[in-house]
Length: 419
Image (cartoon, rainbow, N blue to C red; front, side, top):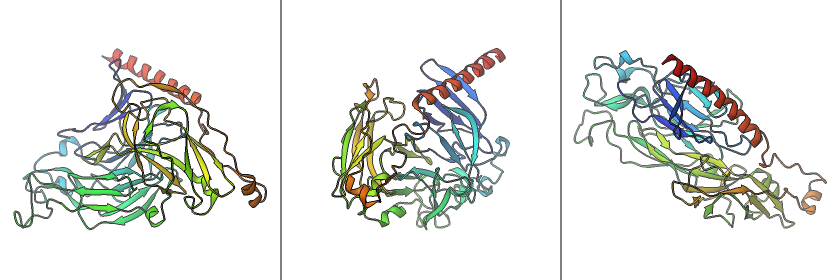
């Protein structure tokens, strides 16, 4: 690659940084200024200008708020193919997807591939736990120039109009599902971001050095786009829950709070309290096919149902670890049976980068079902894996992290010896 701008960088729950550029990857302990090189990313270059799509999977109590990062698309162009006499715009983008969970496992894993190769695709975390994948091109890369093979000035061609859902909870081989199809080419300098009502704002695209229109450059194929699209996910076809008691702030640890849901909020079925989640999303800063800082955090919950069919959702504060979600603004959703409420804007921590107050994690009340509801269901009611630390325990998480740190220390020793 001629350049590797916008290295793909994430703050991990361990407090270290994960950095990926070209094929290389490392964990960076910035506090002690130590780099731990790990295995190269497989198959393809994902960083700009290859510009594969990337995001962190939802971090939940069930996975102990582990950061699993996915990369899809990009290009497998070799460095010596980046010449001005070679038709980059006609070279097919890669369709592979890989993932890694750097705090607990340094292995790269293949995930379900894209239906077709794509560069400049962009992932958006949806409140229901799926990822939305949009924008991009089937051939070429980001960038522009006056090369003879450029499409006008674009280094990419064959816009990808088909948007997709990716569900990381589905079995391998069935994680991708088609969403909507656009008619507007969204390639270099396009962007997308989640809105508080759960829709996705999509805009931009200008693979040119300056403003280009049919008037200024009538022979060009791709112009500066000022049209904006709003994508309505399939959950928008249903009425939204409208809970009360939505917070405006969240602390790191501390006392739980209550959110009230009416029978209507649960679509006239109190059993849907068993399918209700509290979700915090930071939309990040959208540029160059990525949303820097984007996170989806599910909070621990339990519930109490009432005889009138309403319910109280008991919601824990943020886990007492600012590296899971840094302080600042975020969106808070209540998601009932896959349908998000309108979000409330919240402030996490004190809202400023720096030292945060860490409080002890509160113990949520045990989920309880009203006697009337139990009777209506034949005397039995199964509480679906309530998020009270189910799955990998907090202690187990740190044990796994310790093993990874041990491996990194070995890698560091080998690197120093080699030097």
